[in-house]
Length: 362
Image (cartoon, rainbow, N blue to C red; front, side, top):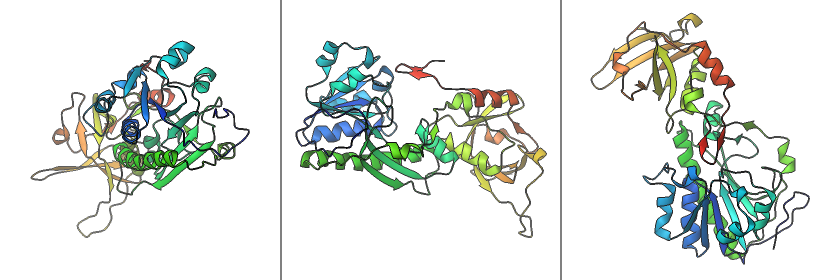
């Protein structure tokens, strides 16, 4: 049952005879999926780029490869799957297989797509057609977006425009305020979706694909990001925008950066706060020239509260570390100014991530 690799028709189909599943990519959800499919009796094969196979998982203290070892799943590390000959592909890809991809390192050529009898599919853990590209949770936090989704989408010669065979949509909780927390909730929902998908395969449920083309006009694409190159605070932004920016680059990333004098510091867990005077009257936001100034420092038994002025409000600093990872919050003083040189802000805006199967190219 070779599936069509174009989008001109959407034909109902079931996968009741499917036994061989090749998982391509990496990450926590793919590791969890390997366990699910293996436990349910599917023959599972792993194909991963170098940067994925030994990647540390976010939710477990082990690499992707280590997570799969207890299930004796065949693992193949490849620098570029598109460079493999037909014989090399036949050596690692079982007959009558389906490929399910989780953030693969490659855009697949026609030969690779046609290798899989039951087709190639992406698990897109984003609210399609929005937040396509990369750094999904960072961009969502920057834009205060809480849409969640997992889509089982066919891979075709038209990149990211294959038919959608199944989907699971949900909302991220209001409590989630970092990429890590978005990630945890997405993985939880993703596992639910994969378990449902596996049962649909086993039970021979008929899939009625939905054409992607009508959705494409509404697409929003946002590119990959690098915290070390782009995570610099612009103190001319509003307090709310600075806080959402900090949230977007929070755990598991390095945190946003700025400077006191010429010393680079990184920040996590910022929050916007309201200040009042002794009569409980709100203290008005200050002039833009005050932005970045530490206007209050209060030492308490187990904590030091530091308030920074920003446009349209005030920010309470959370974690503050230097480039050696040492907490320096207690050393900050009232009257110090946080600032970011304009040159770094311009470079952050101009920077574009370049990455391949081995990692970043700069």
